[in-house]
Amino acid sequence: MSDATSTISKSTASSTPDRLAGTGARLLVVDDDCMNSALLSERLQAEGYVVDVVNDGRAALDKLHEGGIELVLLDIVMPDMDGYDVLKKIKADAKLQDIPVIMISGLDDLNSVARCIEIGADDYLPKPYKPVLLQARINACLEKKQLREQEQAMYRALVESQKHLAAELNEAAEYVVSLLPPPITGEVTTEWCFIPSTQLGGDSFGYHWLDEDNLAIYLLDVCGHGVGAALLSISAMNVLRAQSLANTDFKDPAQVLMGLNEAFQMDRQNNMYFTIWYGVFNKKNRDIIFARGGHPPAVLVTGETQETSERIELKSPGLVVGTMSGVIYRSKRQPLGKFAEIYLFSDGVYEISNQQDRMWDYQEFLNSLTCELPEGKKRLDHIVAAAKKFRGSGSFEDDYSLLRIVL
Image (tube, rainbow, N blue to C red; front, top):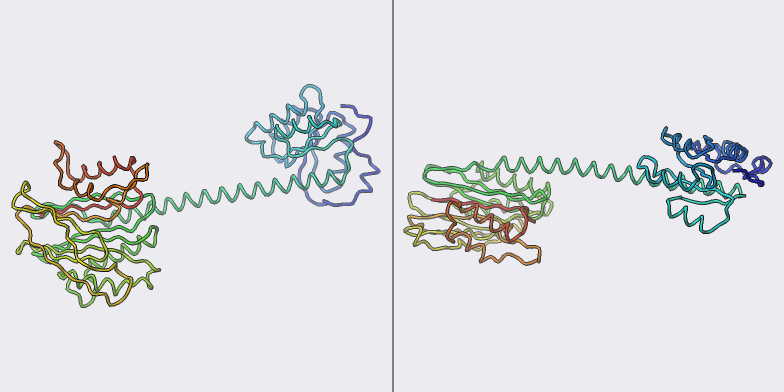
């Protein structure tokens, strides 16, 4: 476009303070008036910028796609493709849309300014303009661009970090599952269901023969979630499997819990503690001796036959493990009928909320342990299906740990 008043004069250029010398940013000047674009380019180069000049919109888009341009100074009134159309194409292109654009025109019209801002221009300067104001606008746009790029880089780094963390947590969860015992069959049959929550949790359980007559059964739940909870859970489980508590008879649940309580004091475990139910089944006496530390009671279903069996909660007093030293735990003994099965579980099995924020009733959970099963349905499958149906989802807020042992 031809303009009687030049955008900037040589005499003005030489007398303006050198505010942004040495910035080195690469700018693109788009103006069909060769004299105006040449004068503007000269001024910007004097200020330390690297300047590319094109005289029409299509050439501007081609230059931008070559890459390297950090800011565009775009005239509005041009033939063939005006500044509005060029701006629209820049902001519609995912590869170009973050490049700041300052619109320049001799049109002193608020509607033009508003239209440019609506399309996506970062700033607007009318001709003739003051060089100091131009420098300030360029500097402000480049600073905003730099901050935006830093934010995007930080966001990408955060996303990548989250991906790595999620992958590591998945690996840790898989490791926890690998430590759980395989089901056994024979004189004792076991089966279990473990559904980790979206976070790495602190549930673990196990069973093993202490000798030819006594089977240890246990399930523990560390407070909170995360790597720390999982590590504490694994450590406690390994102590139980290895029977590595000094001066402890592992056939006496009370002694086991007192030993665990002294070994895992929370002031040495990053203020974490755990609940536990621990029992020992004696196949000769056909009874089970048990103790618990703040854990939900195990549920025994027993009788002369399954049809005449009754449901008994295996409760005993006892604080959570690790909160204070010197806690005394008590063991209790429960005889078993010819038919007997025991359910061990964490509170995540029944403390389930649905989309209406209603909690699953504990009694509903207990009923699912002994209700009549649909034909061909296994007990644990039925219990889990009921929990998922109530939850309205296949995932749970807490680890879902359920262990069934037929004795």
